Image (cartoon, rainbow, N blue to C red):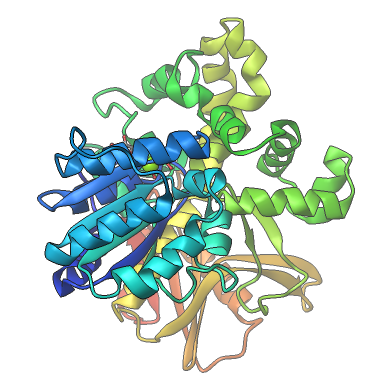
Length: 463
Ligand SMILES: Nc1ncnc2c1ncn2[C@@H]1O[C@H](COP(=O)(O)OP(=O)(O)OP(=O)(O)O)[C@@H](O)[C@H]1O
Ligand SMILES: [Mg+2]
């Protein structure tokens, strides 16, 4: 089963069809589907698909050489190359005769073993590869590394690349293709638990209930997802303890740097450095009120990856109970009662995504340039105010409210949103309301005659 990634595959194919030298860089967080995408792209092509291991230079060069020779059926006749230069020169010569795809997956491991590879590749590109039909794809999951050492201005490869692809987790709509038989409500809940990382989405058995899936995947100590967050942090970081503390603190509601630092008992600057690394791993994100400038001091941290948010909200604090066989108890007394509030947050993200998609297609009467959350001071009421979705455009603004609750959304909910929107002065205002349980007749009637009000049910989010 291969899902989505149409845009990426189309772009890659377009570059391939040019038939000249190409250097593309593919990167993105762990488990997001980089290798799978490149495997799909390489289907039916003359390709060398090399996956680097964490080994030293000699072993790496040796296995790469053998792999390359094997591809050409020459492993019996030619001895492995003694240098990177020789093996790359050989590849370049071959690619002059016929088009060749060379994928180097886990490229950062190659550079760790042989730091001279990027500058060697640069020289090769300028001289040997320039007139060849070689298509190189460098792939890596360390976003910091790929951005600095491969795409960054100080990297020898800077400016040599012909394209780069940052592979993102699937959004809620793409993710829902992993469980097409579920209803809209279950799709939102499931997305909230797993997020958009294909490796995690694959673990869900849509024939079973949400309850049973949580039980099987998170409350069984031998399950993949039970281990995953800890495993991923251990794989990527040297001292997971502080990172664990930071993520848990954020999962439990601390969002300002100062609060997080206080709660974990570390200085702000040190905490900030750790958070930056969690942001590079795309586990933590930072947001500012949509009306603020990029460097605003009002920034808040949040857990960007839904699986991590679920895990640190419900599993991490209860892991001793899981390990002592109290899984049924945790499910019934902690997870199920907390799931609705938890999913409320997911729902806001889903709706914001929906607004972005509609806006990109030009389906609102105002074209929005920026869409996000807003929070700030209400000087009239002297209190803090929050708006789930605010969109800014040249001719107007959009205000959105997302209700994940069991009662129908009513005129009073619209009025509250209208009241909050009075904090902003703009020509045209659009109001959008999202509701898990639908809308009252009165509100539906009201919206019918007013094109500034849009009401969306759960089902419409998946159309
Ligand atoms: N487009 C897709 N459709 C269906 N399944 C996918 C897709 N992409 C990835 N997967 C599945 O998700 C899992 C992880 O994908 P993959 O190994 O490609 O990720 P990766 O980004 O290379 O991860 P890592 O950084 O850990 O190497 C695989 O088992 C794969 O089957
Ligand atoms: Mg991979």
